[in-house]
Structures are given as C-alpha cells and as structure tokens.
Amino acid sequence: MLEINKVTKKFGNNTALDELSFSIPEGSVFGLIGSNGSGKSTLLRIIAGVYEPDGGEALIDGEPTFENPSVKERCFFISDYPYFYNNSTVESMARFYREMYPSWNEEKFKKLSVMFPIGTKDRIINMSKGMQRQAALMLALSTEPKYILLDEIFDGLDPVVRQLIKKLLMELVAEQKTTVVIASHNLRELEDVCDHIGLIHKGGVILEKDLDEAKLGIHRIQAVFENELGEGVFKDLNIVNVQRQGKMMLLTIKGDGQEIEKAIKSLDPVYMEMLPLTLEEVFISEMEAVGYDIDNILR
Image (cartoon, rainbow, N blue to C red):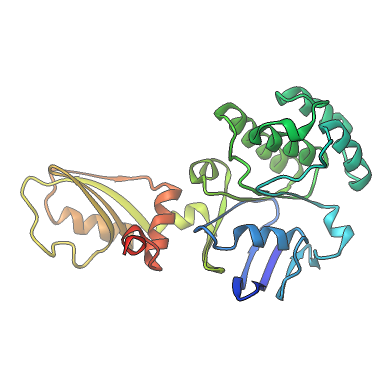
C-alpha cells in the first residue's frame, strides 16, 4: 500500500503541498488530477523519494521512500520530462537499469523493443517528446516494478501508442498486482484505465474515491420542456451547470439521483434522460465547488 500522511512541501514562500493525506490501495490504477500548480508533480517526486517532505511522510509498504534504496527498487518514476544522459540510447539505459533493478526482465525488454516503434540504438535526445516517453515506459515496464509513477505519460503520444500503453498497464496490474499512479490533465485517457481518483487543489485533497463512487453524487440530465420554465424553478436543486439549446436543457446536478429525477419529472418534461457522467464533468463540478471556475478566473 502507498500512504501519504500529512505531507507538506514548501519551495521558498510557496507551499506546494499542505498536510496532504490519503492512501492508494495495492494493485489499483490511481488517477491523480488537479488544477495547474496543485502539487501533482511534487507529490509524485515525494512518493518516488526524489524530494524529502518538509513535514509528514510518504510510505510504500510501510517504509519511507526518501534515501531508501530497498524501497526505490520497487518503484519506477517517469517524470513529465523524462531524463536521459546526453548520448544514451534505449540499449545503454537498459544496461544501466539492469544493474539498478534486481527485478529487471530481459525477455520483457526484448518483447517491448519489438512492440514500440522506436530504434533502441538511436540517441534518445534526438527523439521526439512522444518517442522519449515511449523509451522511458519500455525501460520502466522492463524493471517489473511493484509501483509505477507516471507524470503526464500520455502527453505527445499518438492514439495508437496511447492505446498500447493503456493495454500494457492493465496487463501489469492484472498479472503482477502492480500499483499504478498517473498524474495527468488528460481526463479522457485516465477514465479508461483508473479505478480510483484523487483530486488535489492548492496542495490539499478535495476528493479521494473509487471512480464509480465519485460519480454517484453528481448527475447529468437531458430534458425537453414544452413550455418556458420560470425563474427559480430549480431553486431546491444543487445545480452545478445548465446548458440550453432551444427547448433542450442539459443539467449537471449534485445530490441524490432518485430525488433529482423526481424533482425534474414534477416539471412535466416532454422528454428526460439521465446520462452517464464523465471524469471531466466530475472534475469541473468539484473544482467549481471550491471557486475554481471560468467565471472566477475571468474576473
């Protein structure tokens, strides 16, 4: 299990993380989402043992990660800008990681070298951003880590490679019970692979839940009304967002689903349907609740 206990991290006068706490179940795919500058990348670096927290602790299997080689052997961290030596190739980095990770799987590395469309003898520094991410992921998967931490891993990848990466991560979780933590702004991609999510803002946790559970308290309803609705007709509902197109209304509402459905039906809609919610809609709804929305940004 991965535990974050009251972790605080400051850079000068800026508090990147402020007593942040939550846990990540073993064998899960955890999506770490949040506003720009919320502390996602800082948190991943603390979990990986790159940064030492100023307060609190990050524990992997009950042990702190900072300056703990035995724990780091179980982890692989790919930052938003993967680091490689100037003249390194995928093959030379593979030689390096063979020495660093006792769990290195040479057979898997050879298999991945065929699957990914990059040259293992080419200098990584000359590759595109997307190809560098592929190189980093090939190396990470070959170490067969118990924990893999990914920062914006889908950025710069074409749709085919994104699907390949999602498939490989799912196989890793299913076959080896690996715990995957992905920080990303690409909520559509996260929704395909994550079973848990953590939403952070200004260094603190707003939401940490099973993905399906996070969607239960927010509902999206599409309805058509024959007549124009009067002012305040939705005053008893916790409306997050309303979109209108002629007589069609698309409402995002917080609360109990049955009560919401009953309230909308009492308005005699010609047509009404409850639609599945996306992760992006959950994100927008929760961020609006803490005052982070387009109206406040534009003020």
